[in-house]
Length: 366
Ligand code: SF4
Image 1 (tube, rainbow, N blue to C red):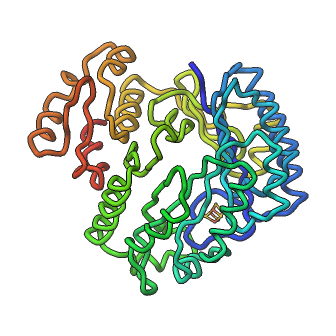
Image 2: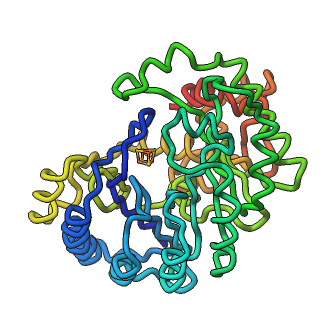
């Protein structure tokens, strides 16, 4: 089976006050040292698992801080197979002519842009360094240099800072003509600088309306709503993320990355010193957790029910040797009667009205 390879680059130019991801301040020296070790880590994973990746995802942090040479070295070691999808997450402020021209010489063929909002008040409040007005010019540069598979992040559920509505936000995103849109509901954890935002976040009813406005607007304009939070132009779904949702193996490398290999979930240390120690000891499955059959089932169900096509009943049977409908008969019957689930040839899926409350429903299957 083909795997996805995820590479974490945990450096950021500044820390966004709402962000809970593992990241550390950027310096050229720290990044160069990190890449030298990362290359050793990739070699070690390659030797141990002989994985064949058909997707590579450089995420962060801010992987667009990497030079083209560093990107080439990483991809060269991962050795993805023919026709891979190779995605780079990009901070829009870094899209300059020189940077794009250098990037166009690498094998990166998909970009995921952290735009978040096309409203300047929102961007300012979030602490993002790009302006909405600068985005069309940056996209034009990318297009002129051959990038024809661009995903954009759209954040919703923000506190209302200004004269802002989701319809206008969507219009602005659509005018940029992306191939893919990933939506994120802003959530604020207790350990972030903006924890006081918890008190000013809009209520669930408001964010639910925003969510369904996004879904309806994009569907009406021909987008494939293929996963609860993701939309693609036909045929341009994220192949890498599909590995997660289909329950495939994926190899996570770099400090803070997670992976799933040989039925074991693992997490690389989210501390640079500990990570360095783990790389030097070739301790690949640091913090590993062998999954019981019940956990494997739970992960498979949660992930597949996120897809709009739903859970593949035959694939469940092949993996676990039992019938999904019999295993969860009561819950399935309850949610089909309430209109939260539907059965369609070979698949069981969440209905549209269940998507915003999917976490409550999925709990009954684990
Ligand atoms: S750039 Fe991204 S990863 Fe870095 S702090 Fe901001 S939101 Fe977090």
